[in-house]
Length: 257
Image 1 (cartoon, rainbow, N blue to C red):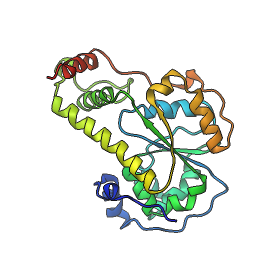
Image 2: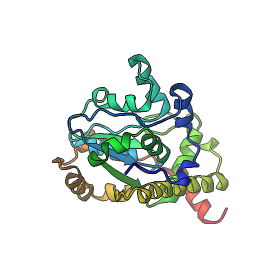
Image 3: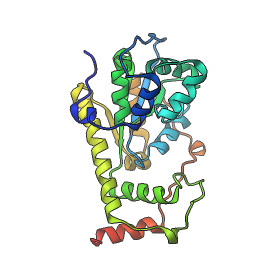
C-alpha cells in the first residue's frame, strides 16, 4: 500500500516543499530505479535534539556516511541543477552516487520532508529497505533553550563564533514556550506519520546515546542486517555547547519568569 500522509502533517507548511515546487512543479509519484539492494537509514529529528552528534557517532563506526540534511531545498537544488535533475525523485535516485558511503545510506529528515518523500513515491519504492530511527531529547526544556540561544547567537556548532556576546542575549519565556511547542509538534507529527503507515521506528534519546550507544548500535545491526563496529571517539568533533546562559535561563524559566 502507498505511504499515507496524515492530515496534521498534510496541513503543515513546508518551506522546503514550497521552494522545490516553485522549481520542479508539484511533487508527484515517479518511478524510482530499483538500485542494487541499497539500504537506507532515515534519522528523524527535531532541531537541537542531538542529531548531528548521533550522525557523527554513526559515521565514526565506518558503517555509515555522515547523515546530513540532504532534503533541505537548497541542498536538493544545489545538486540537481548541474545534473539537469527535474524532480525530487530524480534527485533521490542520484544520492547513492553523490554521497560516498560503504553501507546503508544515512539521511536526516524532518516531518515535512518525510511527507515530500512519500508524495514523490520514494518511500513506496524503498519501503522494504528503509529503516526509520526517531531521535528525541528527553530534556525538552534544554532542547528549547539551546535552540533559542543558538538562534540569537548564530552559533549552532561549538566551532562557530557567536555573532553577539552572551551579555547581549535576551531571555524570553514566550520564545522558549514557542520552541517547546515546535518540538512537541515535530515529534507528534513523526508519530502520526508512523502510525498512519504501520511503521514501528527504532527509537532512542540523546541522553541514552550519550550514556551508552552500544544498545542502539545492536538494534541497528538487527534492523539493517549489517555489522556495525564500535564508534571511534576521535572522529566525533561535535561538542556540547550548553554553558552559563543555558543554566541561568533554565533557573529563570523554572522560577516562572
